Amino acid sequence: MPLTVKDILQYPSLSKASLITGSIGLENEVTNVMVMEALDIEEWGHAGVILLTSYFALEDALPEEIDIFFKYAKEIGIAGFIFKMDRLVNEIPETFLSNCRKYDFPLIRIDKQTTYERVMNDILESIINRNAFILKNYYEIHQQFIHLMMNQPDVLHILHNLKSLINLPVTLVEKVEKKILGTDDYYNHFQIEDKKDLSQQQYMNIQYKQYLINYTAPDTSMPSTALSISVPNLGYEEYELIIHQLDKKLKDVDFVAIENAVVALQTELVKQYALRENNRSRFNEMVSDLLHGRFNNKEDIIDTIHDLNLDTESLYRIVLFSFENKQTEASPQLLSRFSDVLINHSKVEFSDFVYVTRKEKIILIIPANTTSLKEVKTKVNKMKSKINKNQLYENFEMYTSISNKVDPFNIPEGYRQAFDTYKILQMIDEPQAIATYQDMGIYQIFVETGNLETLERFVPDKIWELQKNNPELLETLHAFIDVNQNYSDAAQILFVHPKTVRYRIDRLKENYQMNFHNPEEILQYSIAIRLLKILPKK
Image (cartoon, rainbow, N blue to C red; front, side):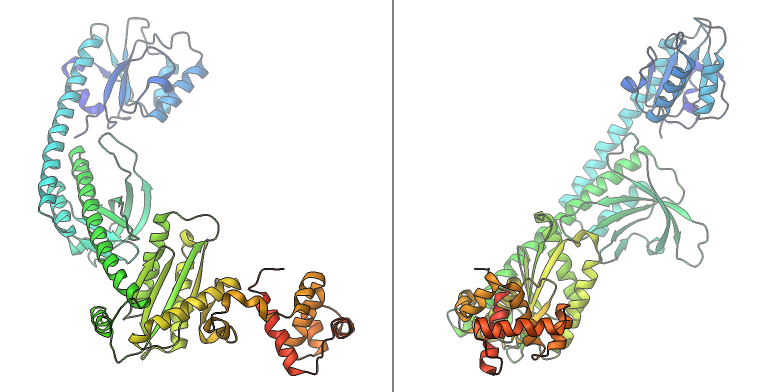
């Protein structure tokens, strides 16, 4: 148990002492004892220190300086004061006493026969003995957890071991997927009413939060306290360890056990993550080989299809997600977390699929027999909507492209379609679109003939000239063609008068010899204008 001001009052050296401030601060923890020699307590003071004074350091101080001294003492966490009489003063000055009461410091008075040495020896002996006790328990608990980890326990085994050490139920919550694992089912279901940071104390090396919670069990009425500790993890999961205090005051050795358990849990979670990543890497290679058609014979393809649990008689679609942080370069950890979240949402929406992950891409192979293209788009939209709600990913942009239906032997063709669709989306800068290969329309001609990188030759010279010298006329031409050469509709799009549109079209006819009665010529202009979106300006 922590050493408190109330405890030290029982020492022989303080048998004749008087408690001046009543019950104020008697539960303050005492971690050290010092003689106060100067006012600059912010330079030498520490939390838990009880100060011995004869008023020497404050004798010439002004009242406002004394008040500042006590204010700093409160912020630091000084445990209290022991005031020695009859050396410099016969009575405790009212300024000193009133500040002790103002800032809730316990004040103990001793007479001139009581030496500092006796008081300090009594207090320090207890502190040293207590530290030795804590160190001994730390070693024993640490050895117990090391032995436990050598036997490769699962998470539940670690939780039960912690429960046996602190005699309290514990729960591990995974907040992303809302999974709960605990030692007692009764305490696994609760609602948090209030939360606050727990002040750092000796032997506490991690950050704790204190919750006020209500258990959802029908026979529970009064709220109870619990401690929460975040358990670091490499994956996208967010783990939280809950210690159900049941209004019990935890000892120092309890915190030693809790922090050893956190290390053990983190080690086990890292091991699980490493195994998962290893399996994912092996799986990635198989899926990647299938997508890129890296097999020399049909037998190898069939073996891989079976290993991936695909059906040779079914049809599939390839869904390609390509993402990036549009504000700054995302850290590898954030990209990995985004990938994991995207995969996790995919598992919710698509019951049966195969996937491969790359640095900033995820490729899914999903069944096409039971899920229509419309349903696929709806599910992807739902996924994106959920992800966008997380502020952590608010700066991410994601291209989504979908192939036509393909059988397992033509999966490389499906991947090519999805990748070409992605390239076109990237060129026309439509990161939020969900596009299928069918949606690409006229662009399919260029990707299928391998001309995607040489689109310039499909744009007539007069269109290039308009882009360079008269973009206003080019914009008018675009709008005029899109509304089937209707002057009024084009004027509404351009926010001008119909006569202005007519004037500009006349200029196109006269200066650029455009024939608006020739449907083949108009088709060429329409295609060329759209190609300009994905080509750099000349």
